[in-house]
Length: 73
Image (cartoon, rainbow, N blue to C red):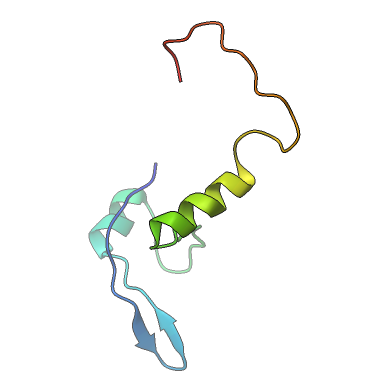
């Protein structure tokens, strides 16, 4: 399960960080010392789409496959 929320980047000592709401962490079952994985999307839509298409989608040089049913994605 993933959650989407907005967070402001803040200075934490010599680093930058975000604050994850305590309610969200509790709901997801995380506590102090747990290691979590975070995905940070690019804020520029065009750049994000270019990066996404670089690692997903049709393999370079391969022909596109023909779908059996045209009404599906």
